Length: 477
Image 1 (spheres, rainbow, N blue to C red):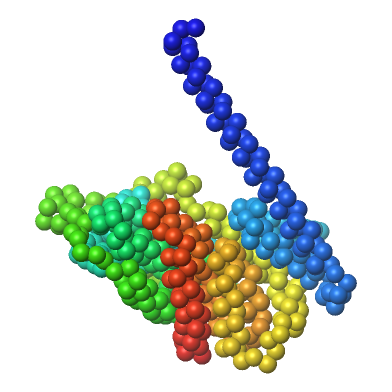
Image 2: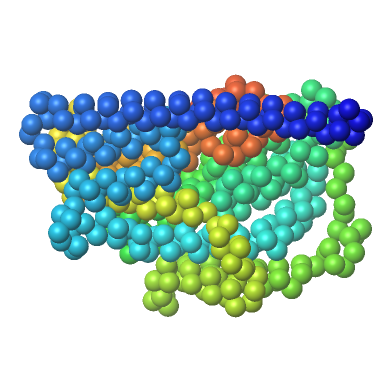
């Protein structure tokens, strides 16, 4: 055999071996997913149709089955989150809708046209434009040049940028972008320097907390707003008043703890280019970045002043959508890469809330919970702590989807307080490396252990529900 043929045969054999290993892994994963799905289906069916639930109407039993089945799939991750959301809608149409009357079953499709989804779409478009034009990276470098690269200042700069970016864009995208900046700074510190951990943890914590501050910052916020009457009840400006103060308080606590727990050793700070050393093209933003900044500022101002100009908050979302399309900043490929899976997950969450409420399931569940006689503030506190615990082990959107309708039913007359407390608490489930995407990104960078996330996560999980309920009671009355 010729040497060239031997080499090609060796490469072909290696490729076949890798393909076989991949197929084996996929087969195991598919088998595992199938078993988990069947188990979740069997358990949900068995519990939902027990004779002990005879006092629950048939429609309520169907809704209970859908709720439990979806919760099981979300917890086990047997099916992708957005797939579970679509399954929820399909089961609602099949089991709860009158197939002969379109006006009956299409109420489960109505959430796809919810103003909240358009509000989130506007936020995603802003984030995509900032990412594509490099505006997010440009802003991050400027902030770090101002704050400096000593460990304490670099930590503060990274956390501030992460917090602000995740108020308006995906916390996953914000964490991934900032981690690329944080890792060289951390690598410049001496081996074993605790401040290296602080820098990586700071990015994860800040991007998790930033989503609490705005209505578009995190999907649980939209679930809560939808449960208490849509954007007319809690608009962008009102949520900013509700969510920003607790988020800022937790941000300051996190920064202080990270500086205290992971003090820097003596050593040179990581070098970054100074503003004076940059050429003109690096000092000033490009024209596309300027357009994004102008549109971003205009959109946020319109969102915050809706009560003055009268334009509904979701309608304002068409400003960035139309302007970025007209200027060519976003093209068809960019639109296809938006986070449609998150919008589908929100769609399913809102539809599940409709089923739980309209079938009487929420009232039935409330009557059986051992919380009768508790004050609305105490009920909100219990639900918030429950949410914080659950969101460590499942998607925070899924946790909010399940618990917000129950919390709203538990606290008649205080629905906004219960819903908002649950949504804010969902953002602090970060005790594990896999609790949130920013946690996973930070953990994958290396140098962090599970106990690092557990320590800061437990503190935030303890403080957030109390802060959310206390501040919410003060603002919402």
